[in-house]
Amino acid sequence: MEFTKRLAAFRERMRREKLSAFALLHLSNLRYLTGFTGSAGLLVVQPEEAHFYTDGRYREQARLEVQGAQIHIAGPAGLYAEAAHQLARVRRIGVEAPTLTLAAAAALGGKEWKNRLYPTTGWVEQLRAIKTPDEVARLRQAAQLAASIWPRILREIKPGNRERAIAARIEFELRRSGGDGCSFEPIVATGAHGALPHARASAQELKQGDLVVLDYGVWLEGYASDMTRTAGVGRVPVQAREIYGAVLEAQLAALDTVRPGVPTPVVDGAARRVLRKHKLLRYFVHSTGHGVGLEIHENPRLGQWMRRDQPPPVLEAGNVITIEPGVYLPGWGGVRIEDMVHVTASGAEILTPTPKELLEL
Ligand code: ZN
Ligand code: ZN
Image (cartoon, rainbow, N blue to C red; front, side, top):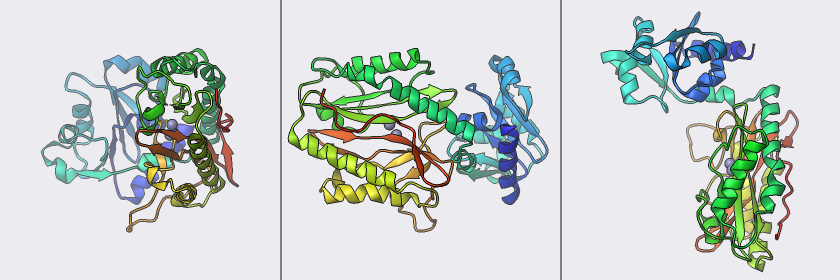
């Protein structure tokens, strides 16, 4: 039922843009439109029919999962050749520009591919940004599962323990609690490592008085969660406490703006204003948040808006986003606090139940 509606919404977009065929390759989009969870597939959507191509490894899985499209198992010539056959008489074929390689373009469109393929960006991603109540329920469950292991992770925050050991504990606990694994490689960044927003967990030992940034998430039934907390290894210096307070203030200010109809740069701007007040803005080196769903980073993006030719995205009921300002001082360390948030009809539901006061463990 869900898949029928999604495909209908996608066909409506094709109709508006006068496209009679579309070839999709991006796996999260295939999953969203058909239910297929495998790692190789191609979906051709036409006004009255849809064809799903995969290879022999996924014959049975495609039969069990794919809805709304006729299934074809490609022979030795490969998925593109099979799909190209179906598309042989189509003059203009919509494709996903960010996913399509030049090799795939040539295989799909033949010699005339430059004239035949019509590049698009974000058509399915735009649909995916508005979650159904069922999707929100899965994301809520994923956020709660990740939060449920937090007390056990806190026990690992002690001098002498290594970043890597804590990352391993996070992975272990998430799987043991029923998750399908980490939605991204956990970030455990202590001391100066905390100044790298995407630090890799290393052999670095935690030291008394350090801050440690922990950013992790879980897959649950195809949906990702994402949360960050920063904790002290024992008592931390006054400066660390002050920076923590500023980041928390920025995070709460951004959260406070979340409701339908609000342009995303307004949310981002609320966090930036607080950090500017604390003279920390130049140390905030990423955007305030991102959508989360079938992928860890998806629409809408919550950052500064530099384009003059288009209005910025606006929050809509059904968006599930993160709010995650941070401050990164080179050579010193970092603080980030991240919650997952559901944009409801009237405001915001915070999906991450974990407390946010500074813990000095
Ligand atoms: Zn995160
Ligand atoms: Zn995030």
